[in-house]
Amino acid sequence: MNSLLKYFWEKILATIPLCFLTFTQSQVDIMYGIIYIVMLDTILGMWVALKYRIFSSHHLSRIFNKIGTYGIAMGSVWIISAVEPELFGWVFRYVGLFIIFTEVFSNFEKLALLGFRRPGLILAKLNSQFNQFMKLDDGPRDDMAENILKNRACDKKSSFDN
Image 1: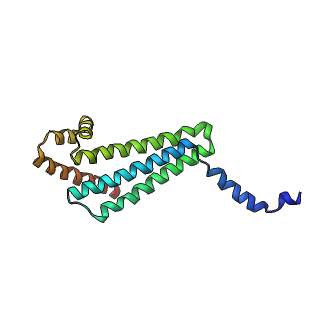
Image 2: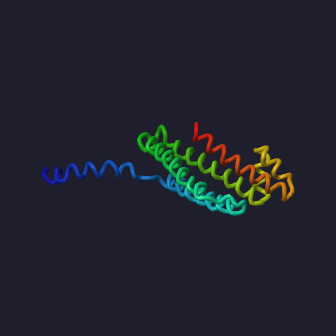
Image 3: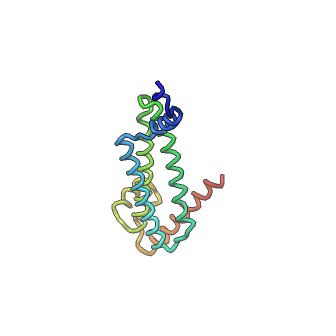
């Protein structure tokens, strides 16, 4: 009995966090997917910024905001799915997939702005701005690309100001 109670509080303190730090393989795969797609988005964003000469540390620093937001979202849904896996086990997967699809469309936008045709054609079916963008020649296309990039920056600023 004495050996069972030895280090009792240390065992309790170690057991609680370790119970919550177990991820399923599916959850690990989703986290790797998010990390990979955000890294790809950052690289493509730098490429677009260099091409259109709008590279700045302020634009690059938004990656930390994105990582923080996604981290809080995934941490929150992971807690829900860890506490009640039978009822909320699906939440982690679908929030993760939503984030991945959000980043995929962001990557398609950047690829279209870089001149890749297929992603632009897909976006043209979903977004009227990219529909116009894909129909333009190279000179006016560059002007419209800069306009798209400026509007995205203004939209993001105004959403934070409110």
